[in-house]
Image (tube, rainbow, N blue to C red):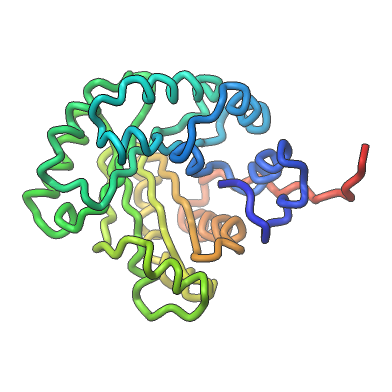
Length: 271
């Protein structure tokens, strides 16, 4: 996402919001592609608004991952891959988010699916079945299937969010929808991807990400190139929090490139 009613760029015309977002952060989760495959023209406009080094992590359509559960999905998958082609190198990874019902017994289907995917893209898989996190055999089974195709395992860290009961409407809503899973901080590839959910209280969000600061700094020192997405239940302060996380990592790894300085929003005009 790159637009939110609480963010300054929301006041811009729709075709300029991504460009403004890219002045705050250098990567974005493409969640809308889960619900519908965009047109090539729309994707080309995304490319026009971002530098070649900007990172899109795009979610595969739900018809592929949830409705057909990775089987008999060649048509929708081809349409999706064709649509995102204009992004070129900006397509950092294709994100395969699987439903909570996708269990260890379904890993062979995932392995077959990954083997059929074109090598021109990198892939990252997010699982939500508890057994992958609590059963060593299931953990090993999934890790081996991903390693065979050089795919990454995306952790969605909600441990800080579920640490204490909700205190806002947005938190209460997220409490019923977000997965409650054990912490996982292991990278399988040189391009790990992390999704972190904090709280609407920024202080608690920052407290909860401290172990990620150390992990990400370690990945950078070892030559990896991680991508970290910061969320809160209302996401009102997400861009500023993402920049703060980057700054905290940069304090430990000074050679890390700084994020761009956001461009000021000028007065909106009719012409």
